[in-house]
Image 1 (cartoon, rainbow, N blue to C red):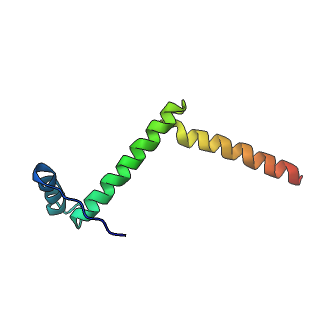
Image 2: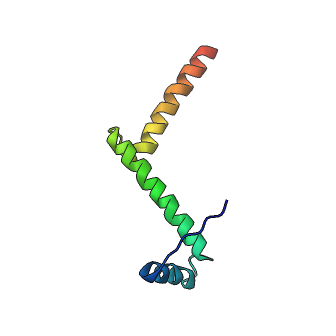
Image 3: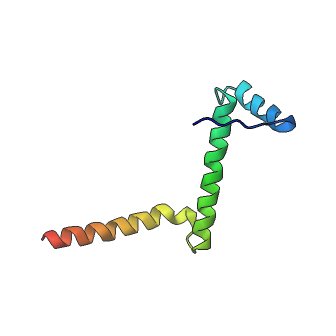
Length: 77
């Protein structure tokens, strides 16, 4: 799905600089990355509101995985 967004002034200048730097191939690519970062920020905020430190998410995932695997394989023995 395509959408159109009007960007003017400093924002347009910023997008152009990112493309000219070679980091991104197009302004659309810059905007998509910005949206991804906004989603990440929102998710991190939601985790913090639930008392979960996003920096510890990998550790928490490993702990939960170990627990789930332990239960699964304990049933098989």
